[in-house]
Image 1 (cartoon, helix red, strand yellow):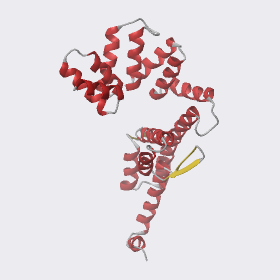
Image 2: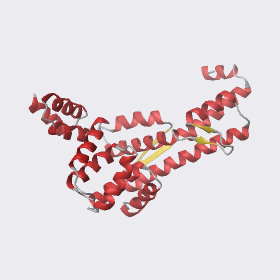
Image 3: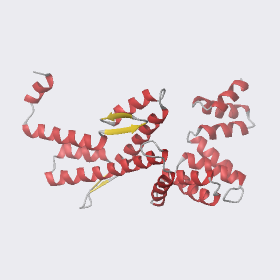
Image 4: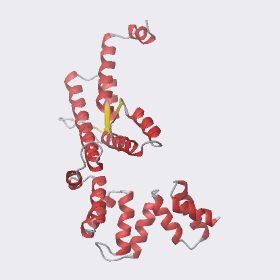
Length: 267
C-alpha cells in the first residue's frame, strides 16, 4: 500500500471530499494546458510545470517557450482579478477564494458559484492566449486579419497589453495617429513597452507634435521600470560618466547587445 493510501486512511470522509474538490479547483485554474505548435504536442498540469518547461525550451525552441510564457502571463493575470459573487461578496483574487473554500467549507451551492466565477476568468485567460496564438500564427493557419481584429476588440475593452499591440501594429503600418492613440492609452495604464514607444512618437513627432521633453520623460520612466532599450537610450545620452555607466550597466545586465558593446568600450 502506498504512503498516500495510508495517509488517506487517516483522513475523515468530509476532509477527503474537500481535498478532492480543491484538487478539481486546481485543475480548473491551472490546467491541464495543452499547447500544440510546429507539429509538437505538450501537456502541462499547472503553471509551475509550464514555467519550468518553458525555461528548458527557451534554448531549443523560443517560439514554443514564448507561447508558454504568454499562457502563464494570461493565467496569472486572470487569477489576480477579483472573484465577485452574486450577493456582492468579493475576494481580491483566486487565492483568497480558494482559501475561503478550504478554511470555511461553505455550503456546496456557494462553493459551486465560486468555482464557476474562477472558471469563467480562466476561460478568458485561455481566450486571450488563443488570440496570441492566432496572432503569431502558431496554432492556426496564419491569419493576421483575425488576430488583429481580436486584439482590437480587447484593446477597446481596456486591455493594456492589447492596446500596446494594436498601437505597435499601427506604428509598423505607419498609421501614426492610431499608433499614438493606443500607445498613450496603454502607457497610461503603466505598460512599459508602450511607454517607451510613446517616447519614440514624441521624439520624431509621429501622430503627435514633436516634444523632446516628453520623449525624454517617457524614456526615463520606462528605464526606471526596467526597460533595457530605454536604459541604453538614457545611458548613451547622459553626459555624466557615472550616470552613463549606471544606465548602460543596467541595460547590459539584461543582455541588451548595444549596451554590452557600449560597456566594453566604456571600460
